[in-house]
Image 1: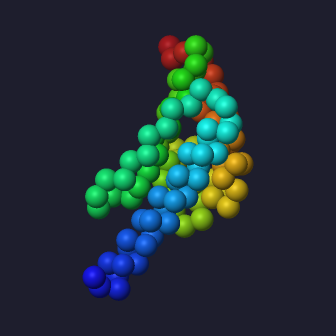
Image 2: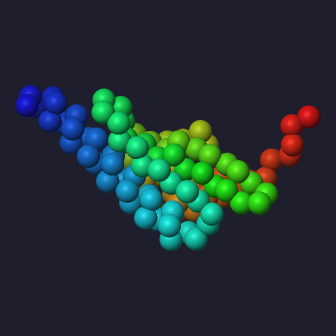
Length: 100
């Protein structure tokens, strides 16, 4: 294995570990959240997160870029996974008015 390939693998492993920590933090938030961790070959590991309640159904795909969790809502620091989990749940739980 080349040094470049090893570094690439090492980064994917670190990203996966950060996402696993986020999954654990999301479970502690006690919100109606369903999470799928996906680690396809040759693609960055990512989470599919769905917030499902009687009033709201929000979804987001979350990946890791350096020290940040990245999703359609923006960047959230990965330094504090508990805060990142709360921020993600808050963003997903927003009730949007119906489209006309």
